[in-house]
Amino acid sequence: MEMIHTMEFVHSATIYSCSWNEAGDHLLTCSADGTANLISVKDDSIKIVQSWNVAGKLNGGKEAKVPLGAMQMGCAFLQGNIPVTVSLNGSIAILSLTSPSKFQFLTGHQSPISSMAIDQVKGIMYTGDSDGVICSWDVATGNSIQNVQRSENTHTDEGFDDTLMNKVHAGAITGMTFSSTGKLLSIGWDDKLRMTKSFTAEGSTKLDSQPNSIAKGTDLVVIMTVNGLLLAKDDAIISDLIATSYEPMSVCVSSDDKLVFVGGK
Image (cartoon, rainbow, N blue to C red):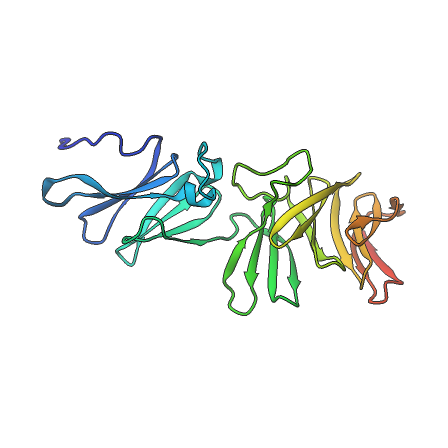
């Protein structure tokens, strides 16, 4: 085997993947620098003919260090000639050969789905997974919409998730429902209740013990933890911990908010 050509400065960081098109005359590369390049190898003339700044698009055009989640980890050609890349955060970018600024993104889960809630009014299903990621889906079409993001204005110790790993919770999401104000409420093994509006997690409440389930009647929300129950209403906790004499395993609330049913071991 003999090396016949070397090409330098194709990327400014580690190249994680490369792939040939069907004709074998173009090579697609992707890198930790958040970009993808298309290299022409026709007639012994090797040169970059197209570049895509996928990280810049994911990051809203901000000029900053490439976020961890926007690193490009894999690439391939679909149907022989359509270039695609996969980011560390799981986003799949379908790249345009005619315009480097046009992208189509597909989002989804990379770990097991652990919870679900449906907005019956808007026809949107939310799914949460064991990595703390929440995805939204159009119920009518089954298409993904986008991942829920933490807000830049969230007044919490975590603040904005500038890694772009899309983690709403720092642990597995164990339950989701909707409050009477229309916000998505989610609980997770980071021991937090989080409130999401319009695909943005706006705030959180620290819980004293690990939550494993959440249920709603009409206005009343009940959070089941390993130590007992918490009552919530209008996006706020309204009770102290209600201890149980057994380990609670499941919970539901009657439609009139008068009865709470708790199952245990």
